[in-house]
Length: 125
Image 1 (tube, rainbow, N blue to C red):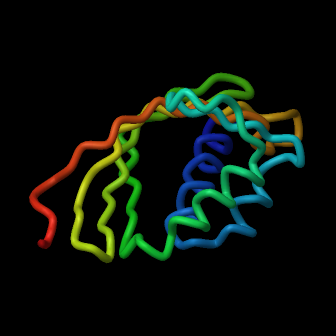
Image 2 (image 1 turned 90 degrees about the vertical axis):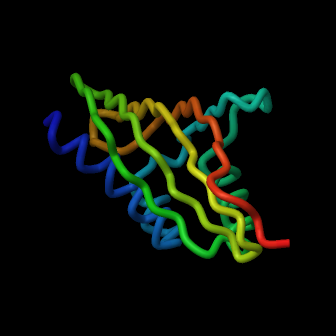
């Protein structure tokens, strides 16, 4: 089951990468909660995905590189780097550690993300 959950965590991120919001939602329960270390508290999965959708027009590309995963029954802890390029020329990386909690059916029920954005190179002026 551990490899299956590892794969589901990656599948969720690949859906975000390809802007397939419905596929990302389908991997989650109706009551999935999301927490980020931004001080804004918890969000529902709907609020979280709606926030990504609202910002996506400024994103030229986004690619997740999975560095490592650790799992145990019902949980995956993952370290990854998101390479981001905006339409305005900004390039950067989001270094993150993410916890995925799963229900008994294998759907994501909780996401906790500790992330830090690091600009790479310069921005077009």
